[in-house]
Image (tube, rainbow, N blue to C red; front, side, top):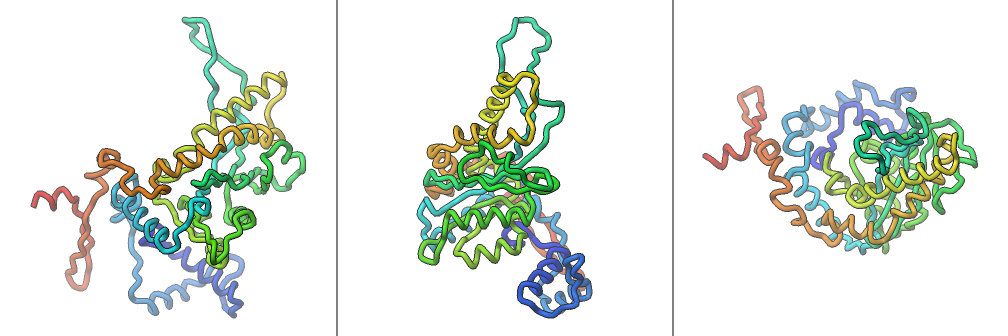
Length: 349
């Protein structure tokens, strides 16, 4: 996990130990209320694995984790090349999943004609503050889209919330309306039902490093059991390496804003509520979810066709001196010091 940018904290390891014990029906003294293995168990774990140490990530975060830099991008393409070489996934068996927030109030308005010199131009919005829901989108470089998922911030689902949604949409509710681990598990089952991966016809799923994805033990196990390979995008790189961010999310937002504005004009005095979200989102989604959009997103990211040189040196140049660092470990017994040195210093030596 650390080598793929997502190191586990002490709490993460204790949580995974508890989940492993539960899944394998092992007798254990762990706390079922917190879902964690004990601190004494973790101390024993460190003694059994002296090759693993607890390290502070700040020294490597600049070089490997933060920002769109050569270290992160090259590592991502190395992993992708290895996976594509091992299983030779066709384009229609590769997918990218991501979430986006959708609100009952337009985040911005389309431009309108106004008299020159007017100091303030206004337009009607649904409310001062909107209610945020989440849409989960998934597409492939073959131009296909998995039906979306809508997550509403409420305790119970109502049939009326589904009116007008894109065909095949699945729905979920929780207190926040955001993606949670259990909700992502529901979406993953939805993904498996549509993709139906087998040993002879596996699938590749590319997603960002949100903790509901990368530290979701149940999803990782189900992916392994159902012939799905998962690759995560390095932190802070989704604006360049995630096809949905590159080609789909940008047109979706103005289409959704236009749908809200049309509703407001056709229904004077009414505001947009959760019960209109599915229909308004459905209008925007069906306009944005085109094969050319999906194909373009994967091509611009250099994923399909595979092109690790899709980004020029100038794209990474402004991160160079800050992020491309060389590290050495200096041992002065009994202490080790980790030194981080800019590559520009080494090049000048």
